[in-house]
Length: 638
Image (cartoon, rainbow, N blue to C red; front, side, top):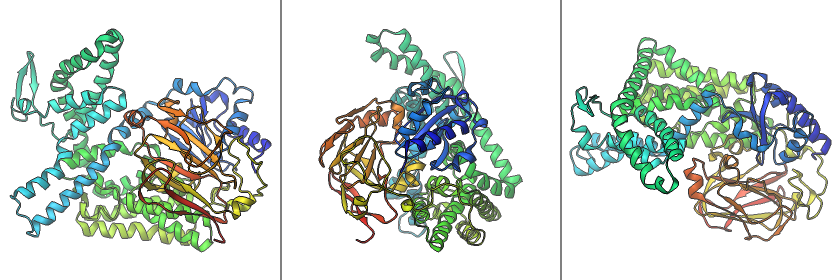
């Protein structure tokens, strides 16, 4: 049971370990974690934070230090801001907290390229299909059918500047359709007809250096940065009544020529220079390249800067092949092996909590290529596992380097990507090495446990009965009634059911908040999945917590990181302490606006106080209607 004294002690400890109030520009919380904007990360003791009882995990994300507490985070934050020196901090201060330039850059790159990955993955697999069909004589290479399939596989790469112009402009707050239109102008037949690549023409009395902008990336990024600044300037100086017509007109009229004359040529030269530098290293020191890139990739992902290399790899890929993609799979293979190895280790130790985390992580990386659950749930919490992962990635990378493996397409999933790697035999051997090495090392060497209850059984704690009808927030308790009751949970919103491991947030996907599922919504409202009492309605309106009469606590968290919207686009229809019946309206949200703001709408629905003697059985898969059966919570005896 979490007591007031425990909350106060935890708050003091966390406050000290983040460097004290003088090191914190702002602190606020969402439904599960404290979010600190700190002035100097060097003063934050991440190791001791992760070893602090009551802290589930500490991560760096989006320029913040996020300390995952669980659903009683409100009480901990209240105790923290009540401490001397902390009262000056409030939720609104986040906006004034300064982020490091690198955080801003890599957040920009991630938001630009992450939405494109599904289309790129699908297109790459179509390319493989066309190659196989033509090689085996099923299709004639010059047939109309082959031409249609070739266009299907190549279009996303040819028009990459248009897509980058859209996502980058959206991330920066400019009109994404204007950004896409500016990038598209450089692909228009009227522009490409001006001259051959490498030629120089005259436009507006200035030299116009002609390049092929198909499949390019950097010109669109530079254009989006210019568009965002110009957009803000125009909206400051033009009367609101004129903005709808004149802002996009002026942006197109000025930025298309500027992109053609300045941003385009600069972007092409920068992209070619980076690509040639990496190509030089992979050619002149290939084994160094293939060993170092996979071994260090774990840190790139942890810091969110792997998107910088992925963005360069996509440019390489558009030109035909990518050695970066080839080398990076050493990391993917090793992280897959770590997850499998931890499943085996947990089974040997009969550690149910660790087993559940490892199984979810294995599915996530094996099928979807999503490594964050393994990274945050299994690798970073245990230093020994981190060392094993790096050794395994380097070993797998060495094999990739010996065979000179490169990518001709992109899919993050280790097994599905095999047909996209050349030579495939080298990729298969590297996959085997990446799986076997960590599995063996984890069984022989073991892993280093955290000094917390992160991987311990949830029923190790005394659990007194709840106060009937209490709506005073999550308690995190598993009472006697909950342990013996079967609770059917309906879908709180319509959409597509996803495994929790597919949630694009390492805390939810790693199961740190609790088990459950995620829903990618197709509607714009949330209803009560069960009858009970509303116990959590944050001011930001992005989440709802309900406690059933049996004592089971559920969290419905609409979108990922949507707390940053500060309540915009959310309308709550209930208050804390209110009784609700299954199907009652809890919340409405503007799905289109949230997506346009760059946030994922994937909604975790989790049980925050599942006991070690309970289990969650999924009852839905694929499309699900509002209030349809979602999952059932069973006592172990069922």
